[in-house]
Length: 216
Ligand code: SF4
Image 1 (cartoon, helix red, strand yellow):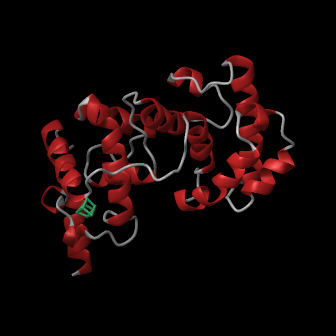
Image 2 (image 1 turned 90 degrees about the vertical axis):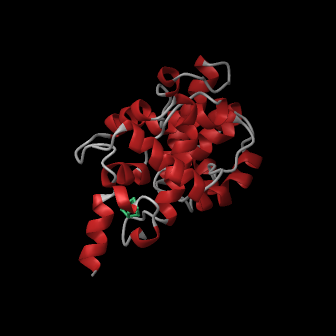
């Protein structure tokens, strides 16, 4: 497994490669970010950003979603994957915000994860990006990179990967590390044909060395 020191070294290389990585979802408030992250499951950030301006114009508050017909929410998000379920979850989630949280987005894991359609990853992204609460969200890119670099075991669960990064990185870097790893996964350490020959981590990455050897 990659040590704490080497994991921190690797992240420093990635910060140099991809400075100031940030989330790509456009949102003006914690509430808008929560809805945007819910929509982004199995959808690209670009596709979410295309629908949210009209969605938030039609439904500017948790109360407006809570009182909406599901079909009207669906009409604004039908280009997004799983839109039937997402519309249902958004309405229920906003009813919960109104009933249990005074119309505000809560600021703890436990409270966020009570909301319909909100899992650990969504809670982590909202806590980190909306409230500056140190948190580390694990998605498909982070999972792939963690296993290729042996930051986590090959059979590690999402929760274990989150714990591994939290143990190996300082708390104040968790949010930045998450965004940097996602862009690194999109641009360099891609699922298919990763760009190992251009990767600053090649010398500590057995998976990358193996990819290059296999390609000849
Ligand atoms: Fe990913 Fe290749 Fe870099 Fe390893 S060397 S981290 S597999 S891009």
